[in-house]
Length: 436
Image (cartoon, rainbow, N blue to C red; front, side):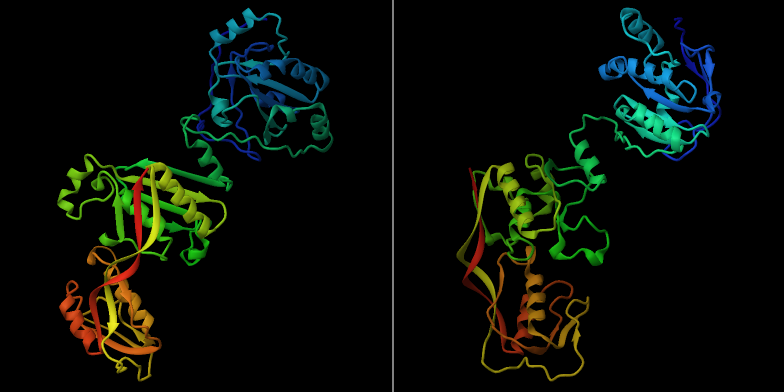
C-alpha cells in the first residue's frame, strides 16, 4: 500500500457552511487519496452507490477496532455501497501510525488524511462519526457507528430510505468550559436545576429579580410561574434582601430592618454615598447569581436561593419579629372623611403630576402607593399601615412629590382626611445575618 501526502482541492463554494440531513452534498474534488486506484476522487464517482463517510482518528481505539467490520461490510455490499475513511491528522502522522502498527487490518477503502473541508461540512467533536449520502448526493443520516450495520444497510437498499438516530455533537470553543453542559441542556430544554455565583462582571448593570424562562411573553411572566432567580452586580446585602424577601412577602430594604452580626459590616452593605462607591468597591466585590429550576415553584425557588446564599457567603440568616422604629400610617379620629361619594372609578396615584388622587377606589391601593413610595432609600424605616380601613375612598394629595417627596407637605395633605404619618416603635419583621 502506497501512502502519499494529502491535499484537498475544492471548488469555489462556501466550505464553512454545515450540511444537514436532507441537504445536498456539493461534489468536492479530493486529491492525493491513498488506498484507491486514483489519487483523487469525487463522490459522484460513486453515484450509483450509498456513500458512508467514516470520520476517525489515530487515537480512537473504537475507530481502529471497527476497521475489520468496515472492510467486511464493504466486501459484502461492494456493488451498492462505498465507505470512505476520513481523518484530519497530518499525512506524516497517519503514515507513522500505519507503519508502526502493521498488524492492524486496514479496510480496503479510500482513506483521506489531513482533511478540513469534510470536517467543516459535517462538524463534530467525537469519533467515530458516520455520514450516509445517497446516490443523488442527499445526506441521509448523520449518526453513530453502531447504526452502520449489515441490517440497516440491507434495510436502506430495500427501501431506499432509512431513519437513523442523529448524532449531534455540540460544538464550542472549548469543550472543557465549566458551563458547557448546562448550555447544551438549556438549548435542548433539558436543564433541570442549576445555580452559580460569580464576582461582579464589568459591563452589566446592577439588577435582580425573578422570571419565567419558559416564555418571553410579558403576559406569561406571572408571579406564580417563576422558575429563575437572577442577580447582577449586587452587594451581599442586596442579594440577601432579594432572597429572603420572597417576592413581596417581606421588605428588608430599610437600614433598621437588617441586623448585621458580623466583623465587617462594610463588606455586606455598599455605601449610601455613591461618591464613595468606587473606593468601597476596591476591597468589597459585587456578585452575580443565577438559579434555574425545571418546574415553576416559588417556595422551592426561594428556599434554594436562600440555601445557596448562606452556603456561599458562609453565614446564617433568619427572620425574626423585633420592635423597631417604623413609619406608621394611622387615623387621628373616628370621623370617616375618606368614604367615596361614588362616580367614575379612577386611580391617578402613579402619574408624574403635582396632584395624585383616587376616586371611588379601594383604600388598599392608596396604602400600596404609600408603601412603595417609602421603600428603599426614601425612608430608613419600614412603612406600616395601622388604619385598618376597608372600602372605597376618594382622596387627593397635592404637591407632596414635586420634585421629590416633601414629608411636611404629605402630612398636611393626609390631615385633611384625619390621617397622619408618624414614627413609632412597632413589632416588625427583621433580617438577622450572622457569620458562621
